[in-house]
Image 1 (cartoon, helix red, strand yellow):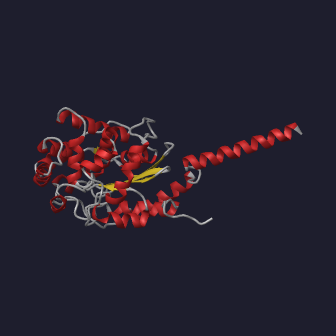
Image 2: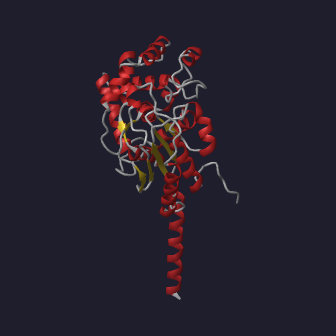
Length: 341
């Protein structure tokens, strides 16, 4: 009788542990075989898609191989799933804005971003000067160029070198490895960033620039030229999905509270003019860059990223959008998909 009671207690304890693990990690609802199947299907379904074209307003981006196509998904417990070309590097471009924003929030608090930059979608182009003029530099957000340049100016550091070092470090910490600058892309962008310099000076005129405008623009230009691959971007997304702890290195990069304030801005301004359309179809916070990378965060479950340079008219990777939408649908991880009890 005692043995029977002991066995019942053991079974109940095991079942309780399984329930707690499923609830806290959200992993047992996503079997590895299902993840692999979804990635395989998505890769094969979209690998021959020829829509879109490379960004060409930055000369070096026009020269990137348009056939690069890699998918990576990393769960919050560090399991890595990949398909296609995950080694080829592209410049991170606007995806970097997320992690600079997170660094500022970590250093100065969520209110600093809200008060000094803003967290609302502008409803205009990512590099709009009209949006600044209409709001006198207020009520923008760190994921459009004006807000991103302002965020770069807010990074702690006595001079531009210290600020740049801090930005490169936090991007590397999110990626789980040392990242480096793509010099040809940086030189190409730095030689043709007069609009961003104008934006920085206009922000300064409205008291919304917090460091030298020319140097802040240069720091921002450098951060956009950091080299990454699909696995790097997926690791960065997975770190956000895991509440700020890198699931590969186990390093705490930012706090869970910082992530809590970062993801909503991604949800409202992550894919340029098509952010609302993206959220309508996937429900996931995401960020794209004109280098061809796109990452999305499934909070408490995984980060996913795709690198494919050809873009749509809004500046988002065509294949990346299709792949991630397909995977979200197959795995049924849209957070707005709630099955009735």
